Image (cartoon, rainbow, N blue to C red; front, side, top):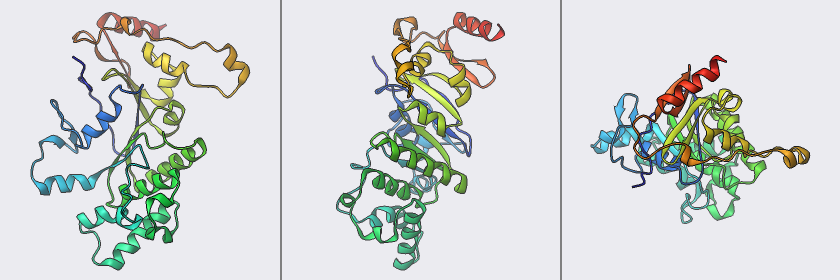
Length: 290
């Protein structure tokens, strides 16, 4: 039996960005969608401000929760309704939560959000097909910001964009975080970009969290063999270095992820957690002592 997510546990602190990385199909997006309740958890708890997300049942509670937590989706083309104007797309949350007293206040709020994400006020009357991928993702960010959320899950928000546009979107997200005190779960494949935006990084493999540490610690002192393999695959913009650089292959048979209770997330160093057995844990600690 293969589980999309199996026994993962981590905290996200207010005002920080937690990056989540791993290969395709490892469970990153499922984790994000389960946190925001787009997917129902089959077991366990998702706690937001001390309350169980999946335990909420009344419409009023769900409505209150959805205003605090929003999501930026991966595909800027599929996540925007082509039949709706940009104003209606961004204002959907405003309408649902009754955040505008009249149509003029609604439009003012939409135009303000468009300017905030680097677009023009007159874009409000246009349709999604009139925009590039980067502009559409900015519209998606404006939609997420429309209800003044506290926590935003960004599910690979830059994977469908050109490299130059990726930098613009990530810089915009960092700027908005500083201005509005936002908290992010940033899911991505690009390890270099994740390091740039994240305070801490979690590495997922086969539905499990295998390593968790601050971004600098993870990049400078990776412990788990899978993390080392991922980091060795990051391209270096130097042809000579690339010709001689050796990549580290990861052998999954090195670790047993089929219900072995001895394999769990252990704190090898303060703030640095690694999924390992008791024997591996002692070996990793010995490395740090040396």
